[in-house]
Image (cartoon, rainbow, N blue to C red):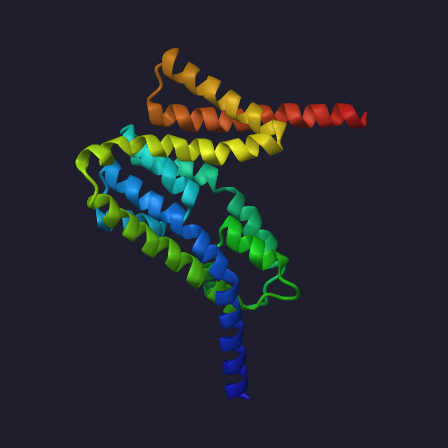
Amino acid sequence: METTLATRKISHFRQGVQAGASIAIGYMPIALTFGLLAKTTGLSLFETVLMSVIVYAGASQYISLNLLSLGTGAFEIVLTTFILNIRHFLMSASLNEKVEPDVLWKKALYAFGITDETFSVAATKEGTVTTSYMFGLIAVSYGSWVISSGIGHLVGASLPQSLQESMSVALYAMFIGLLVPALKKQRKTIWLAGTAAILNSVCLLVFHVPKGWAIVIATVLAAVIVQFFDKESEAERHA
């Protein structure tokens, strides 16, 4: 009986690894770029890998690099990351209804590895998702992100100093690359980005708010304002 149970767990773990292989491959270029930009921002190899180990959130790590380059304090960076990743509460709550019952520490452990991609794979899997499957899915994805981040930093260290300094422009190109596809799909995203940009400029130029806090304030206010008017327009359409 115990042998059968262990075999089943290994099988489910293997299925998770297979399902996460495509995510791991997709993470490689993004994590490599992060490691490269982390090197140009001034982070050491240890700091770069440690950020990927502890944070494990692509967009948040890129934003953290930008905030670090602006000299933003730790509290503002943590708060911005929290706001950006608050959707993970919803994803975890939703996935909790689909996974098999298990002890809390195991759920907490694999909940750390839930990203947009791993959530999508687990949520669309037919039937109940086992704990072993989740660990397999997350292990290969997480490993790919952390290792590729370190490799990116090592590659960046071998580049000429002049090229390393110019690579800071790639950080803004990355943000544009993430934003443009969303702008094409939803008009709401356009309003959100535009409102946040205006509010950020007002905070900096009119109220002389520090750069880090300006980003945090602009992000929160823009989300509240756009959501409010979106609800109002939706109510009018149904009236």
